[in-house]
Length: 313
Ligand code: HEC
Ligand code: HEC
Ligand code: HEC
Ligand code: HEC
Ligand code: HEC
Ligand code: HEC
Ligand code: HEC
Ligand code: HEC
Ligand code: HEC
Ligand code: HEC
Image (spheres, rainbow, N blue to C red):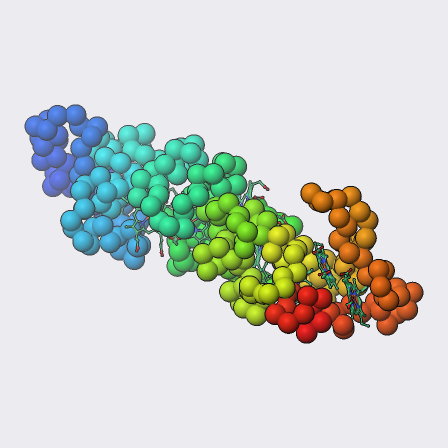
């Protein structure tokens, strides 16, 4: 405490008295910027860590206006606080409503391409602001300035998803082979388009407007001469659980044919022409015969085919 007092006093002598004079000379003191060197005097640790922060670039470049430079770029004009050491006289993010805090960040980050849809994302509309996931001073190396390892940040709120990635068949997120952000954009995704299928849950498109899955499973990307309608219209998740499953191939059902029959029921009356999705019972398929239950044995190109409208080759 004594150390702080002594430092404060020497600072007052070295910087602050001249600052007070400056403040009086230049009008409204609550709008005066003092620069990072002044903050450094009292916040030594935060300031020295800040040199490794990507936000230090504004200080290093030295050509940004004061309201976009260093500490005061986020915490606002610091003159009154620096001359009083009163924490009520500076922007304290922990005291701001999530909406106010994110507006401060978006002053600079609203034109990042990946954040185009942030204001109507499920997170921001659910009052989950930037500082719920990002820690500016406390990231301890987790990139990009995250409060911890990415999946742990997400699991703090999405507990149930962790269990899905512990299932016998799963994408290896918990093992570190991929991340939530390979499929999701936590800042919000665009409205789904045709090739994106019906994927509203902040699922981020790949290649502009394709499902994220096709980045890695590129053979499923198509387009195919004969598309299997649900792959495009409802998305991969109409047959697969994207996170994890107790069923092989991450399928939504333990046996393939029960899944097929959920749609291929031959029940009429749906759609604009009230036509049924054709059921296998139409022709020769004999569902009592186990040989006919392995649908993908005869229909292996189930994701789409360039050769056969029944996906047989
Ligand atoms: C004369 C010393 C001094 C200077 C100069 C100074 N601060 Fe502070 N600052 C303090 C003290 C003391 C506190 C209060 C700590 C407490 O009460 O927990 C504080 C608190 C803060 C807080 C609030 C912390 C919280 O609890 O949320 C912020 C933010 C802050 N300072 C930023 C700055 C910035 C930015 C600058 C430079 C513009 C700056 N300070 C300059 C001494 C100073
Ligand atoms: C990119 C925006 C941003 C910049 C730049 C920034 N801060 Fe902060 N600061 C925050 C946020 C957000 C918090 C709230 C705590 C958190 O999320 O880490 C905070 C918290 C603080 C606190 C109080 C909490 C603590 O960790 O002790 C102090 C003091 C502080 N900042 C000082 C500074 C100083 C000094 C600088 C310049 C070296 C600076 N800040 C630069 C955003 C910023
Ligand atoms: C004064 C402008 C400004 C403000 C305000 C600002 N940032 Fe930044 N931010 C930047 C700049 C400049 C960079 C560096 C960009 C780069 O390297 O391409 C950056 C980088 C980042 C990064 C990326 C780090 C990385 O490793 O790629 C994150 C995350 C970030 N900011 C979050 C925030 C958050 C959260 C806030 C609000 C608390 C905030 N920023 C406020 C200008 C700002
Ligand atoms: C739900 C958690 C979450 C929230 C809320 C969040 N972010 Fe992020 N942010 C992330 C994750 C995770 C990444 C890393 C994404 C990646 O690696 O592709 C990231 C990356 C970034 C980056 C660097 C990469 C890029 O996309 O430019 C910046 C800058 C950034 N966030 C700023 C912000 C700002 C500003 C806000 C608030 C308006 C915010 N974030 C809100 C989780 C979040
Ligand atoms: C601080 C809590 C919090 C954190 C951290 C968080 N989320 Fe969320 N998330 C929410 C809330 C609240 C909602 C909206 C309510 C809901 O639909 O469950 C949500 C919704 C979502 C949704 C569903 C969107 C929809 O349209 O239904 C996805 C996907 C998601 N979050 C992914 C992530 C990812 C990925 C991360 C880590 C980068 C993350 N979240 C971190 C709280 C959080
Ligand atoms: C392989 C791609 C992929 C990965 C990796 C992934 N997700 Fe998802 N996630 C999806 C898809 C696709 C949906 C949409 C499912 C639907 O609409 O039926 C979804 C839906 C969600 C939802 C909303 C629906 C639900 O099941 O509650 C949340 C929340 C969510 N994901 C969180 C996460 C988190 C957290 C992580 C990382 C730990 C993660 N996801 C990793 C693809 C992925
Ligand atoms: C970042 C790359 C990546 C993305 C994106 C991705 N996957 Fe995967 N996927 C893999 C890898 C790698 C495996 C192999 C399984 C493992 O990791 O053990 C896999 C396995 C699978 C399997 C099981 C294959 C088998 O032979 O058992 C299915 C089904 C699958 N993914 C579907 C999807 C769907 C649906 C999506 C989109 C929601 C998706 N994947 C997104 C990389 C990815
Ligand atoms: C109509 C249901 C259906 C849809 C929609 C679907 N799949 Fe599949 N998928 C299957 C079935 C059934 C299998 C199992 C095939 C087998 O066992 O031989 C499978 C197997 C897979 C496999 C593992 C075997 C292989 O062929 O590589 C991957 C990877 C895969 N699907 C990815 C995807 C992706 C990515 C999408 C979205 C573009 C998607 N699936 C959409 C039904 C579907
Ligand atoms: C989510 C619903 C859904 C699931 C699950 C599904 N399909 Fe389909 N399938 C469709 C729709 C819709 C069509 C297009 C029907 C049309 O054009 O009249 C179609 C078309 C087909 C066709 C071509 C029919 C024709 O006359 O052109 C075959 C063959 C087929 N599916 C086989 C399968 C098999 C095998 C499975 C299980 C692995 C399966 N489907 C799972 C919805 C589904
Ligand atoms: C022994 C091979 C074989 C098996 C097993 C098989 N199919 Fe087929 N399926 C065919 C052939 C061949 C056709 C093309 C019929 C034709 O030429 O008119 C066909 C056609 C279809 C059609 C299109 C019917 C129409 O009216 O357009 C659907 C739907 C279908 N099968 C679904 C399934 C489902 C679901 C299963 C699993 C329960 C299954 N098939 C199992 C060989 C098979």
